Length: 324
Image 1 (tube, one colour):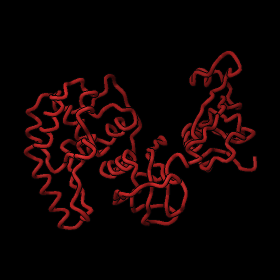
Image 2 (cartoon, one colour):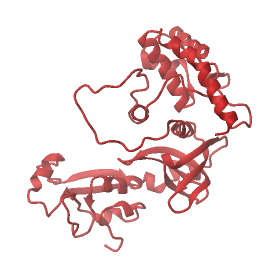
Image 3 (cartoon, one colour):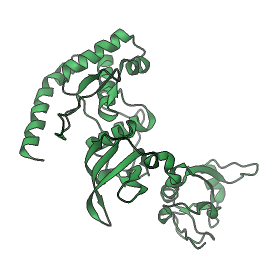
Image 4 (cartoon, one colour):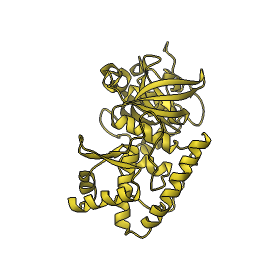
């Protein structure tokens, strides 16, 4: 970051110090509504009165007051689009390439992803606490929030992104992608989209993306998710307890496999072809034709390996061989 950029960011933070103090004096319910406005602007790029009315069950007049208050607290973040008749994230001066938006609230990776993935958490103000004692293995990384915000705005508004991307094969390079979905593979987050340089659909690790910039242009249909065969193809996975297990009934009970009928002792999953490799890797499903993988981690076996024919990301599937 250049000295000028650092000074600009510092000035904005100083300007927001007083509004954030004012937030503390508001009621919890009003702060939640302002949080929702901030969240929608940051991650989707727009918000309107209807969003607030439907989300919180308030009157339109109250929603208008909340939007006016937000504009008073953070005028650099919001402007009214008279054409679309909605509030949008304020645009930077033409050609500057700088983000004007500085969130009024702080966002954690877990909270943001929960809101984007499940639709809840976009109105939560405060420190999250579990209801009962609950621990999970440490997450090594969460997506960078500023990068994630630009990706989600691009997805929501059907826009392309210019990015710098780090790959293991080619290092750092500039690319243009057309993102359309976020993917949680259990360990890290990817964005699925069209890679214009390679003329194909691919997954990009979110934390390998740097300096994303929105591209304001029409997207050809061939670069949208309707043209992504791997995304639109659904494969049926027939997963059973690994034949080498001494007590397969334990796995049947753990995964709630049916005990009667044609699917007895079988887990029947429908999954996008683009995600099949991630699922099989995450659950250590032995994908060898003759269930040959040995090891205590293999509790499951893919019974119908031919279903994987033509799936792209099978390098992730344990034991799968293309000549099987």
